[in-house]
Image (cartoon, rainbow, N blue to C red; front, top):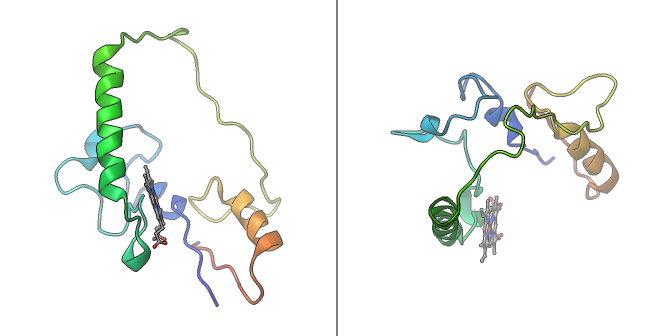
Length: 120
Ligand code: HEM
């Protein structure tokens, strides 16, 4: 049996990220999120080997984006919507708004003998 973890199980869980839909960079200040609740580069022996390189490059990129350009909203009051995705009629696992497409992918492409477990 293999257990498939998906990031939305914790990223959208208010138990770990208060008000999870809010864009709030300050949630990463200080000690930041609880251990193992935020793992953008994976973990363990197969963790992304270029984690620090990627972080450094993004830092340089963001620095230049902010300091070298002037930005303004084309439509200041424009509302954002989420593009609709496939949703199973019997519902989704808790806190997993995008997992339906992943479930479907796993059903069609999972390796022989692999089973999916979902955090509910
Ligand atoms: C924002 C940028 C990046 C993110 C979010 C990211 C994320 C990840 C994640 C989640 C994994 C899987 C870790 C696991 O299985 O636990 C991974 C693996 C890997 N990443 Fe990245 N990565 C980034 C940039 C890069 C860059 C720039 C390189 C190379 C120049 C790179 C090379 C690799 C390699 C070679 C692995 C496979 C490691 C292994 O299986 O042993 N990544 N990355």
